[in-house]
Length: 476
Ligand SMILES: Cc1ncc(COP(=O)(O)O)c(C=O)c1O
Image (cartoon, rainbow, N blue to C red; front, side, top):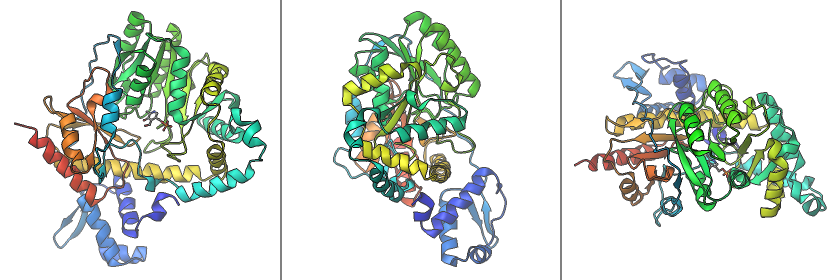
C-alpha cells in the first residue's frame, strides 16, 4: 500500500493542506476553511480536522488567530545557503572508512530520530505490493531460468528500465544495461574498470562517503571539486584540475547530490559532458535520486548529452521503490561488455527473485503513482524540517533547500563540532551524519547532513529542538 493509504486520516488531511501551501495554491495570510466547513466537506470528525490543524500549526505552516480561525503563516525568513567549499585541489590518499563505519553505528542506542539515516522511512514504500510482486515474479520464473540464464539478469527488468529512460527521451538499449547489487556495486565496478591503484579520480566536495570508501578500497587518490550547494560541481575548477592531475574518471552526482542536494541545470550538464569528452575523462554518473524531484519532471541525467557512449549511468531502486532488495543497474554504453564481465567475475549475478519481483511491479504500472505520493511526502517533510530548523537552530545557521531527494546540509559557524554533536545526540537517540564523513580531508567539521525522509511528527520536532539546544550548548 503506498504511503497515503496507510496514514491516519488527520495526517492525510494535514499533508494535503501542506501540499497546497507548498505549491502556492494557498497563500500566506489566506484563511483556511473553518473546522465546521472542512468537517462537512471531508465527511470526517471535528477531532480529525483539529488534529490536522494542530499538526500544521506545530509545523509552522498555519497559525491560529483568536476567534477568527486558522490562517496560512508567513514563510519564515529563508536561512542562507551554506558557503561553497574550497578544497585544496591536490590529489590525496583516502582513509575515511574507519570513521564512516564508526559514525554509521548507533553505539547500542535506540534511535528515535534517525536524522543520520541514508534512507527514507520504510512507511513511504509500497511494501505490500512488492511482497505480492515477489510471489508473482517468482511464479513467472521457470526452474531452468534459475540456473541457465543467471548471468545476464532478468531481461524484462532491463526492458522496463530501458522504457523508463525512453520516457525521459534517452535511447538506452537493454543490452547495455548491467544489473547490479544496488547502485553501489555498479559504481564500484565502474571505478575498478577505469582505474589502476594510484590514479587520481575527481569527486565532489562534500561528496558521498561510499564514493570515498570505494576510492580507499581501490588505492585511488581523491581530487575534490568545489561544489555549489545549489548547482553542483564547478566546471571551471573541473577543467583546471583535469589539466593539472589527468584523472582517470570523474564520479559525480548531477541530480540531488548527496549530501548537498544540488542539481546541475541542464546546460551545466551539457557543458560537463562536452568538457569531459574533450579531455577524454569518463563520467561515472551516480544518479540514485534521479526520480525524487519534489515537483515537475525528473531532471535529465548528464548521460542525455553524451555523444560517445562513454558515460556510465548508475541507477537504483533502493531509494525510490524497494530498499533492501539490492537491485541497481549501470547503463554502461560502450563499456557494457567489459562491465558485464567484471560483474560476472565478481558475483555472477544479482538475486533473480528480487529482479523478477521488480520487473513484475514495473509491468503492473503502479510505479508512477507510488512516485507521485513519495515525492509529495518528501517535499512536505523537507518543508517541515526546514521550518523546524528555522525555529530551533541558532540564527547564524545555514542550510540547503534542495528541489529533490531527502537530505539537508546544515552549516554551523566555524568552531562547531559535528563529531561531538553526533556523540551527544546519539546518547539521546538522535542520529545525524557529521560533515567529516563527506571529505577525504576531514573538512566540514562544522557541518552535518540531516535526513528529512521521515514523516514529520511531534517526536521529530522535539528531537530537532533538542539538537538545536545541543548546538547552542557548544557555544562558549
Ligand atoms: C549517492 C548515492 N549513491 C549510491 C548509493 C547506493 O545505492 P544502493 O543502495 O542502490 O547501492 C547511495 C545510498 O546511500 C547514495 O546516496
